Each structure stands twice: as C-alpha cells, then as structure tokens.
Image 1 (cartoon, rainbow, N blue to C red):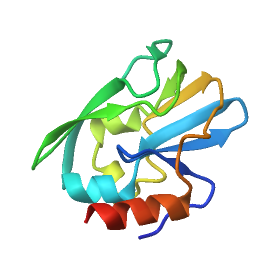
Image 2: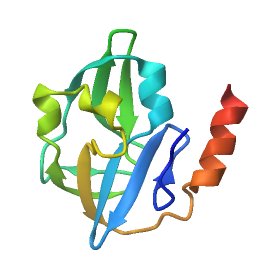
Image 3: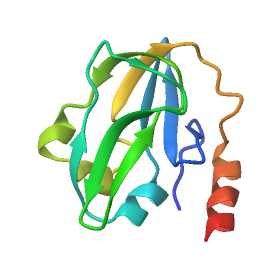
Image 4: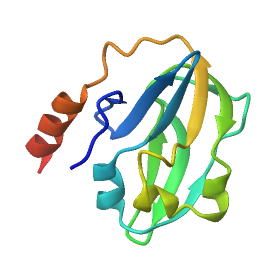
Length: 125
C-alpha cells in the first residue's frame, strides 16, 4: 500500500494534508479499494462548517454507499469540483483526488501517521 508520509489518517479512512492555512481531505487507498468503483459523491458546499468526526459527504460505489467523516473542525474553503463529473478519480488516484479543503484549527494530534495507519489497516484485515 502506497501512503504519502506527510498525510495523517483517521480510523474511518480519511486523510488530511496540511498546506499552509488549509487542510486538504480525501479518502485513503484502502477505503477506495474497499468501496470498489466509485460512481457518485455528494460534495459539501464551500463556506459550510464541518465538525470533527461528523459526516460531511456521501460517497457511492457499485458495492455500497458510505458517509465520509471530517477529521477536523473548520470552514470549507474549496471542494474538488472535478469529482462531480468524474468521481472515479478517487479510485485511480486517491491521494491526488482530494474532496474538500478546510480552514480551521490544525490539531492533528489524534490522527495516525502513515505507519500507524498501515498497522491499523492490517489489524482490520
């Protein structure tokens, strides 16, 4: 499994990448593999508030529908509009296909490092 070392991960399989004052958020390679072919994502709205551990979007695949949970609290500053017409980008490049960008307090202390996440995924299998 390929994971970028600058990312932090949640137990619900979202990733966070801090870029200056914002945080990009997406789903892990493991999550997209478990979902299968992604066919739809209900993107949140720019300027909406998100709260850590609360749902911010729904994602659907040929196998299942799932909720996505925010790893941080803040205000959505951008959404990846490419995903509206091409949600399958998450399958082909889960660490490039970010879902939303959030401005907020950067407290990633409860999130897992790459190594911790890899161990967590192994323990779930």
